[in-house]
Image (cartoon, helix red, strand yellow):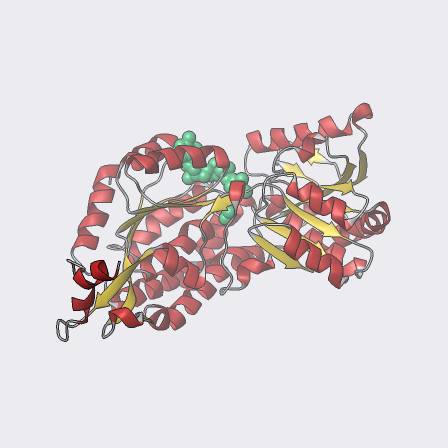
Length: 456
Ligand code: NAD
């Protein structure tokens, strides 16, 4: 199916009205669930082919993540869709007011390669639950996952979802069409292209972007567990996670303690040589590998003022980069843009307040992770910074709380989804007012305002 046919087909289904009943929506969610469960092995293999993902990680962060989101949505949807009563001011009474959610129409979902199954299907859960039809564009950078989705989705979600495979030309053609909502996950550069295209049709959009998500750690915490959790969040999917801890801020003393524990935690999770660990992924392509190793080389030059804590080994043939920890300063090459790979810089600050200032001088992060048992410090970060999410004691895990919205702020994105926030994103909240004609209480406010004039 070409691009125009795909969009026309999705619109025809939506216009038929078939998507509106709750039953249809639940059926689509159950069908998506069946696809994931019946083809769990195929998805696992595709994710291993694209990113070297371990089956357990594929389940935790993609397949099982989606089945959990579907289960939560199926359970809550009837409640979420109930019209909400709204109070009517005395002057307008008697009358009834309410809001009612209605679907937007045809939604375009454009997904990236790093969680190629999760990030295409998770927005669709919300879009379908809200009664829309969907055109989905998987990332061409994860070809095995893209091909599998293109093969399976028509068997399970024939009327509801159309998959269009391809790269820039296909996406460009898609963006010329009129949609009722565009949901884009990826980088800020392409987000600008998507937003300009959306502007032509005045299409609302959600942008799920990235950026540098900082960690702040102080000496008050139990360092062994903190290091283990930072390693887990950072090196999952070989660091190619939008909410991966990008770098760590701390005082000299805190970073010295952490730097001792990080290599031990890396060994605990990935063995003495991560190259032989089935749990450790690979870099998506040669361009990304060259970018990452280039940054590392630049910061390891004699005059760069950086110091390797652990790791640093790379292998171009297998696109392997060892989990790497490095002390740098704020001017380092690694500190300029989102790293999106398995290199963790440690940056010294004098105090928690300096860390807060450091964060506030930069783009608003997608996530901010604070490790501190000091209530004052926790309060200062909560009140003194802004980020898509703020977590204490654990990175990344906020994604698996279905009741928490997921999304960025400022340069890390606009809009939010997951759970009920997905329903809000993919619905129009229509205002309804119903006032009986009799008695006509409005008689008091109709012109010609005779009595008012006299008073003046
Ligand atoms: P990508 O290269 O796969 O691109 C994303 C999508 O944009 C793909 O479907 C691709 O075909 C399309 N695209 C690429 N160039 C285009 C162009 N010129 N015109 C139109 N469409 C185009 O993925 P990526 O952008 O490299 O993904 C990594 C980025 O995404 C990182 O910055 C990461 O932080 C961010 N990310 C954010 C989230 C989130 O949920 N907030 C999740 C994952 C990744």
